[in-house]
View: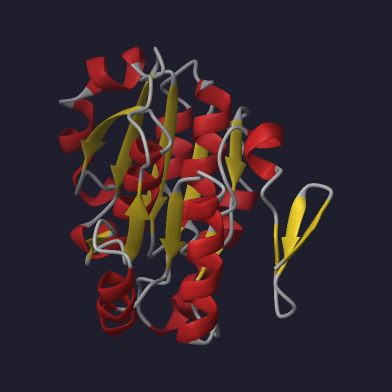
Length: 222
């Protein structure tokens, strides 16, 4: 390990230990495509620098490998997130509402919700309230109006983001998912719907990017 200004050079990776100061949370590890040994070395370097751990898109077998090396590492199998908080967070004042259109969208919604919780946010989950039964959403209108930020996760046609955004005054972050039949084009249909929304105050992240939505919502809530 060679320490440079703001990062640790491991040769195969340059661990950005300065990100905690800049962003308020340590560098997050995207797991797919990385060798298990490399993942372990990056994780160890972050811990050595007293930084929290968040591993996204982490499969269960790789988690077991890392768990043997870092016994305190936790795992959420639905969100496919590995995480470790070195010290308790001071909970941010605002509440972030995470909404999913359907149960099939739950893995991406949980990725957003758990990311938010690891980063010290109070989270309320509101799942399976898509536009095919809009009365389910309207039954929770008070929760929508009380939220500081809302993350909306939806596949199929992706219309839920616009609907929610039109009902509230807070920022809305829409997450298209790859849930849907053939003409949904693995989430492209939902992405285009959200990008073309006529409702102002709604931003859109990439397909299945629950982590990105959770991270952005945390910054807004801060």
